Length: 497
Ligand code: BES
Ligand code: MN
Ligand code: ZN
Image (tube, rainbow, N blue to C red; front, side, top):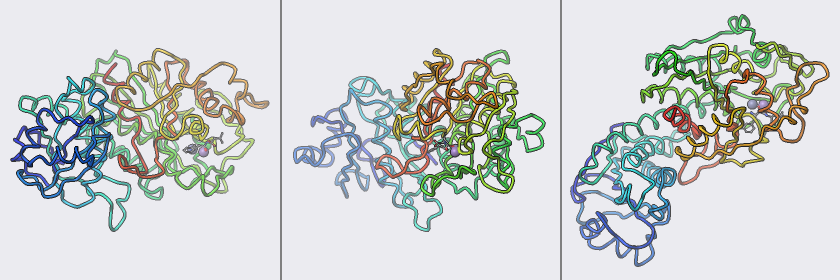
């Protein structure tokens, strides 16, 4: 997509849609006064008639305006300017882009509002331009790419309109926004594609291609290599599928060799049937999304590499299908994980932790100094926090605080849950070192306590993204299906460390 940053005069902006932010409060000022005059006071009248209120993400189209070159205006509510931040501006622009991209070959121009860094103290010009580019890229691509008549058409061209003198800041921001948007779409595409298209081998192929394009070192372990690496826990899950497993790692070195190596680890269950502890039809319906963690770490490392952040990061993806065949792993099986821990299987649907156990231990053995894992791990986390908030769990508060700070800057919602020792009692087994479920209560936490046993006390944060990774319905400001939730946070963590 072509993104043009310019400070063209209102009257001259050539666009199918000129997207203009309208602050809440009813007083026009700055460049809006000029625009209002150009179009014969239309803005003033819309506000007087209460047809345009400026409430966050409100959309008011103005067709065939006179006095400007743009074919149409789209007024988008910004809410109160002092409240305007990355997340709120994104909500507004995503709504606008989703609206205008319902037709093919549309060229919109997004005007950044006045008052950035002043009345809107929480949003800089650069950040606003970043949001504009990301919204243009993400908001115009839906989950319906295999439909004859898709609801959205990827934009070929978009303009970002700024006040004179802001061009350089806006250009830098929009360059970042493009990278983040394209990475989000990579993650979303992998999650949204159907499970007969995305399975461990095909996911690994895509990861290899992404790494090759960015010149990053990429390793793909096949089944024999996973046996040699003693990943007995991951392999047990994989053995019920006709599709062989893969573990992929991609390394990005943007800092000195002796700088810390951060591992980002993703659960990549390309389909979760539950195995012999089979899910209901309703429970299984969206389980193509169970590789969201892996897709998110792939998108994140692509973004981090393209942004050339001065850090060392390795992404690890544990790719399996949780299926049923004559060789499926069974209740009562005792597995031996890579780190020697024996695990009694009491529920084959608690498979994500079995996959991550071996991949986390592998990442530690390969020199990770600190880790973050992302997984659609438990329904219990969705019960606890709802569909829009991820759970965070840690063995190291200061590393978790870094992550929570990054999430805040990224405008993503995460809430930390406790990791008290007593939860370990719930994982005790009579026949092995640990069992793979913790019983009815505190399910998101017992899953995290299970994972903790495989990180060798390295600083680690586990993110349970089961709720936000995959949305059940469309909203004006975002498409249903894959969201790419937490990718921005991973980029912010890398940028901030
Ligand atoms: N992939 C699921 C968790 C999930 C649920 C993700 C809903 C996204 C939306 C996971 O593998 C699972 O099945 N967890 C079980 C654990 C239980 C058997 C201890 C669950 O949450 O029911
Ligand atoms: Mn499961
Ligand atoms: Zn699962």
